[in-house]
Figure 1: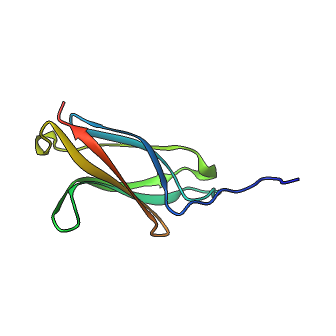
Figure 2 (figure 1 turned 120 degrees about the vertical axis):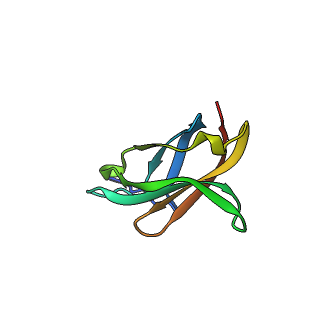
Figure 3 (figure 1 turned 90 degrees about the vertical axis):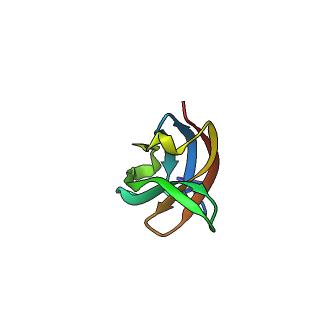
Length: 107
């Protein structure tokens, strides 16, 4: 019999990404359950490693007990035309990063 099995992931979970009209929101969870909040960082980026532009970035706190954390921010929507490929980067306090490709729309 197994009691209180813990989950561990290589990098933060990032899901429910919405990006349109100058607003980015997503849900995230850290790599494992903790008893207190831990700092995290995010960036919304256009382009690749050789040529990229950061549209938005900031910090947030992963909620304790592996609860879903919702992050929301705004950015200059004039930098997006039509439907643009972007990446959402989420990094936890241990330096583990998830990079999720998605699209942003200007409307």
